[in-house]
Image (cartoon, rainbow, N blue to C red):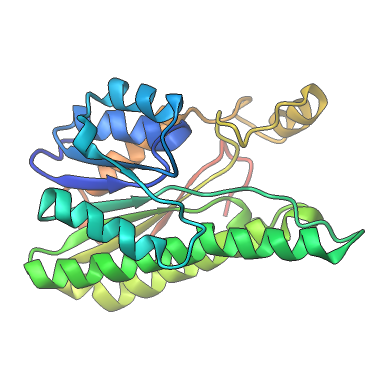
Length: 251
């Protein structure tokens, strides 16, 4: 396993799924993990225990709120002093129906723009300023989606759009900042065994049928790639997007 000893890593959306797996694996790889959740819950307590985190390592912030990303990074910096890496993992997957009343469509767009794009963008801005101040550089891993490349269903256009924008942000910052040792990477998973994966039997059969590997990805698989990207193993991969989708979408 790649090591990130002595690094302090902020991980958003760490109460479940990929975020919880990343928190546990980063801690195992030698990092201090600051784990974010939207609010106290049994899930974040379980993730804290799994990763061996202290109460002081948990940060709460509703990323749908204005300036939440800035507040979260400031709180992380106050707790740890220096942040070496960020994993923007928090995200939501909501319907934005094309038919019926416009209000659910508008609300779905606004909330997903806030959580999936504005908050990580704000965190990236704060992180870049911090990395420049320390003059040590840093790494950011943005968790996007296969949908950011190929699109999604008609009623999930907002989700796909926010993830596509997150990919563009990652590439832009990588091109502009890599010379300062501020490195940006993106991961674009397909279906992962989390709450976002299809629970309905027929929907799940259809999803798995589209995956040549024959199964959805495990959170630990995404977490392993996150640790690799946060390590010193391959700085030249900055700007790249890594697909984890069982060959369901090959670019």
